[in-house]
Length: 101
Image (cartoon, rainbow, N blue to C red):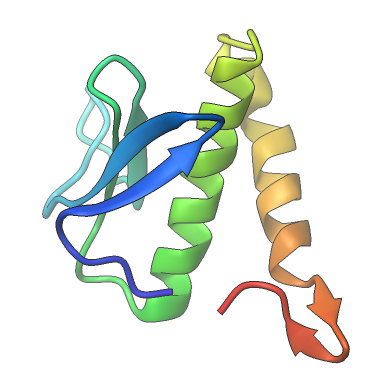
């Protein structure tokens, strides 16, 4: 997967725009690879990353959105679980081939 601008991901009938954003950072200035803005229906990712990093980041942010839609809104408590799920899904193989490309 190599998301481009104006790509849209649909999760349980909710469309979110995948948006490349240079210089993503936290409120305190720490760099971010990605960010999910539930209220804006956007998943942002750093376009400077390589294709694998983009895939990992979009998958990570997608899991955040799935949990948010399921009512798990405290993202700080979910971060470890989200990372574990994203990393695990990256290793899933079907007939020896990666599930996600």
